[in-house]
Amino acid sequence: MMPASIRAGSLKDPDVAELFFKEDPEKLYSDLREIGHGSFGAVYFARDIRTNEVVAIKKMSYNGKQSNEKWQDIIKEVKFLQRIRHPNSIEYKGCYLREHTAWLVMEYCLGSASDLLEVHKKPLQEVEIAAITHGALQGLAYLHSHNMIHRDVKAGNILLTEPGLVKLADFGSASIASPANSFVGTPYWMAPEVILAMDEGQYDGKIDIWSLGITCIELAERKPPLFNMNAMSALYHIAQNESPTLQSSEW
Image (cartoon, rainbow, N blue to C red; front, side, top):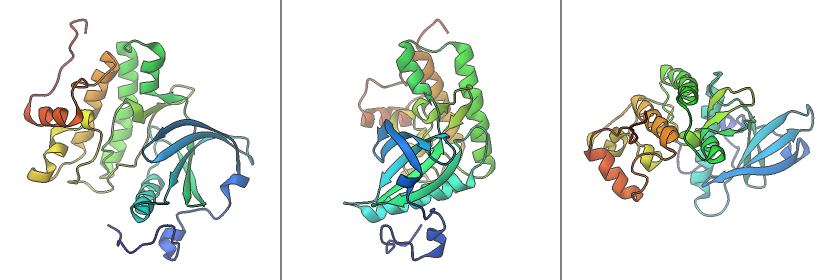
């Protein structure tokens, strides 16, 4: 944990300063178009003016309320991205700061496995689910071998490149240390150990495998189990009951 005294945007600590490039990103990237957004901010399609390469830029503000916490989240995510190098993890290209906003630059992907469900309006075929799961497992095996945990595996965080490569993405919830004990993730995909961690202690990378199993059901049925419940009820149900199965007899 970093000391709470770190002021948002402060680069006095040389270890923090070296996480960020000094250039103005507006002079380096053009054609920005929003392609997605979440609680953290928005993701943009962009073009590197120097190389003409297409990239994705995740903009994260550290302004306003809880600015220090937001700043610490940015530092944590950048440190995590710097540490990972694997064909099945999103490629990180660097981070810039401009007007109380961090620009995290990454390789561009066509979309997520969740986007595939939206486009096709029907579940994926078994061969497609197998290919996505295989790529995600390769990426998770790499993370786990380095004692890291993703903690937010779901179809929306598994991206696909134009040639069809599978990439784990969105490491905002990830843990650099295993075992861990924080209550983190997206409710319907959470493993029982994460839900119970506050009472019963720690968990490790196996919780990502649970979430990937839930993701397989999501890809096969277009929604994760218990999606018709509110999040709190689903968490209680996951913690108390047997692991879910596919509902349809077609499988």
